[in-house]
Amino acid sequence: MKMSDTITEIASALCKAQAEIDDATKTGLNPVFKSKYADLAAIRAVIREPLAKNDLAIMQFPRTVEGKGVEVETMLVHKSGEFMSETLFMPVHKWDAHGIGSGITYGRRYGLSAVLCVASDDDDGNGAVQAGPVPTATPAKKAAKVDLAALRVAGETKAKKGTESLREWYKSISVDERAAASAFLDDLKAIAANIHPSTEGL
Image 1 (spheres, rainbow, N blue to C red):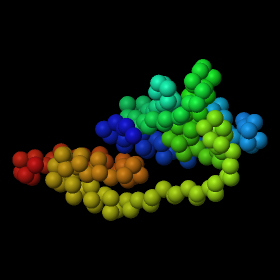
Image 2: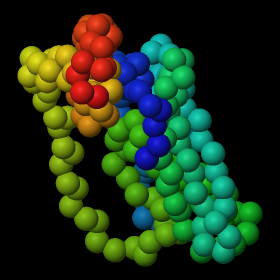
Image 3: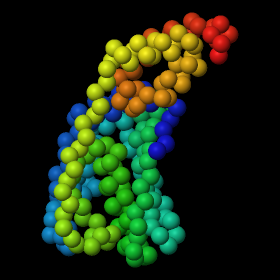
Image 4: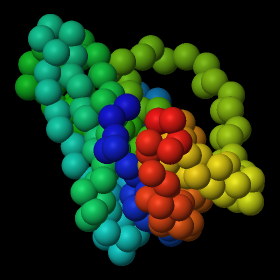
């Protein structure tokens, strides 16, 4: 996974956007498994407005891996310039325009759903798998609960040691903790800025 040096703004915006994003409606039909699935248009329909309202945008970049398949990089960007991205590899069994196009479409849909946690409860990738028993779904894990008071105390402790100490602490905490810390990050920066590095042994 790639991300900008800081993700304070994008994490905060993503928290708000995800609260507004509904699960995608199954509008496509898989001719092999005779099951419906949420196609790319259905996923875009549920994410477009929540992302725009919170100054977020999605970019996707496909590329071929010669003779093996395709990769699709999905990048979530914020107006602040902060970003997060991940790349998904999709095998292609028929190396022609149709096979490559299908791989890119699947990669875009799966990547988009994964990055934004959009549930569609489907697997219509009939070009990549053989028909078989449907696996039991694993319950999704709930987001970790952040102890805001303890997080602030830890941040202040690091901030009192200077800017570099605060920066290292920020890099070490989780995405959920960074989103929570955005509420008082400016205060921590102010504390760190008042500490002279030479007096702190940094």
